[in-house]
Amino acid sequence: MEKRKKWSSSVLFIMACVGSAVGLGNIWKFPYITFENGGGAFVLIYLFAIFMVGLPILLAEMLIGREAEANAYDSVKKLAGKVKSWRIIGALALFSSFAILSFYSVVAGWTLDYFFNAVTGNLAHLTFESTGPHFGAFVANPLKQVGYHTVFMSLTAFIILRGTKGIEKAIEILMPILGVLILLVAGVAISKYGSAQTLDFLFTVDFSKVTGHGILEAFGHAFFTLSIGLGAMIVYGSYFPREHSLGKAAIWIGILDTVFALMACLMIYPIIFGSGMNVKESSSILFTTLSVELQQLPGGQYICALFYLLVAFAALSSTISLLEPIASFAEEHWKISRKKATLVSAFSIWFLGLASALSNGASDLFTSLKVMDRLDYLTSNWTLPVGAFLVALFCGWWLSDEIKTRELGLKKNDTLYFMWNFLIRIVSPLILLIVFIYKLLQ
Ligand code: TRP
Image (tube, rainbow, N blue to C red; front, side):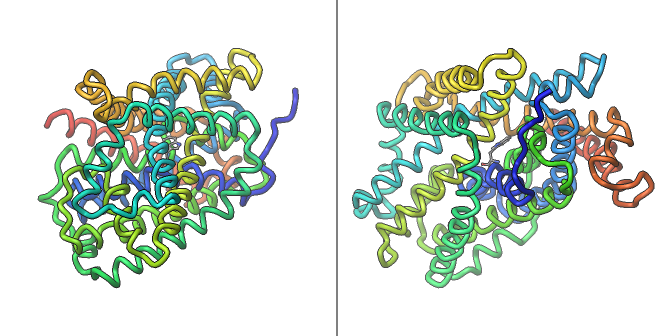
């Protein structure tokens, strides 16, 4: 058998996973869902979900992939042996990646428009009053929506075709720059508007503000932002050389991902609270609130352009991790060429994405069906958590201690192994079950 191609180093692997994890989920989605869910208590539940449930499952996914050396569907199939019902994990995973990428690519396309318009100076006239309507008109423009979605899907497919070598190197350089830029903008926003209200909002825990919906959303988002629940990390793990530590990789991913999400809030909230802006559509604050403020910085036009370009890049390193599971499945499962697999998958996802692209005012039908919101809701709140739940059961109860300890480089009676196994066998599934039931009863 041909030896599976591997990442060239552990750092590149971690970078690729961080590239997948850090994306629109951190910079676009986290700030607005935290805003909608009242702050502090939601953040606390989210952090709990990341570190107690998300990270153990992230480790489980990477371990499954490295052990089986295949795409998510075939990895699970291989390790499950005769028991066919585990294949539901693979099937659900394919559905989730398909659905998420279809709308994710549309939002990623928005960053390209903001980049181009910033470069050409077309955002300079925006004020806190006019930015909302400007955004509304943009997302209702069918030509632009479909156009940018097409560009973004093409870029993604192109990289998946060409191999990811270049992009891993680029992630290593561009992600830190994005981090520094976010910190810089956060610094400016805080020094201009103060941080008291932001910190109060983010860290004052008031459980009366959380609803069943909010709890489910916090868990769902934890999976979304760590890129787990649909086998993307199974695929990435399958390329990870045996001599490196999976545990270390998982911890780095968890920390960096969380730092990016919190920094995004520190950048956006001071502006919202300080400028007295009336946030009507919180899902657009990354574009509306921020573009106005960025323009006011010295050299604002260019800083704004650079910012959206880097966000586009962060989104691109996430979209490739959404297309790869589908393309590698098509390639390995149906034994077709990489090229054909990529093009067919990308085209079908693009096609489904048209419905999302037209669902923000461009088409009456798709707007009334709220296609984008519904796909986001269905995947983030249901199919990802259910996928993660099944992965936890599969890894916790089905895989042998022998496989797991070998992959983790631990011994069966190590405390660390015991703790992780306990989390994944009992704690994660139980918590998720409670969350599902609580939500369904409400
Ligand atoms: N984690 C990415 C983000 O936060 C999105 C993403 C990429 C994803 N690959 C994934 C989500 C796989 C779930 C599963 O933007």
